[in-house]
Image 1 (tube, rainbow, N blue to C red):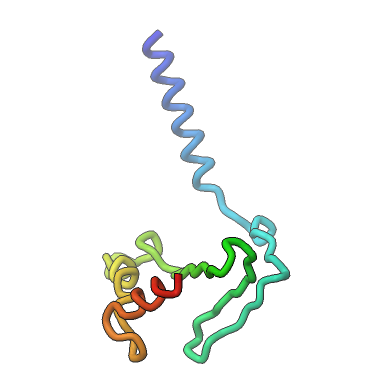
Image 2: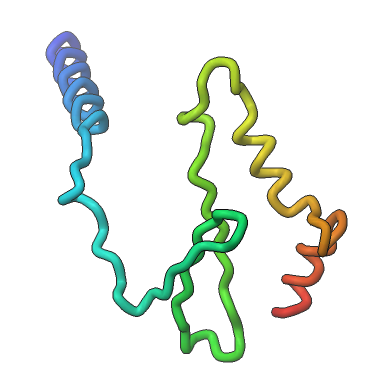
Length: 107
């Protein structure tokens, strides 16, 4: 009985692993909301704007970085993690953590 359970467990794990490695085609992409305004900054960074009614008098900001450890080459070990931490570390207009403080002050 234990051998049978072990075999079943191995088969389930193999099936889950095979399903997790599936590929996606263009047909699998999420449909784009036509209410989203898009553009590209002078720096080349794309942006997406969608008006929201709730919560009232608030805005939501999401920074999407198309990078990550799984996309790194062997010689880039840790670069994505570093970029994640540096994203709000400062700019010419907002030295050090002033950008975080500014965004938090806006609600």
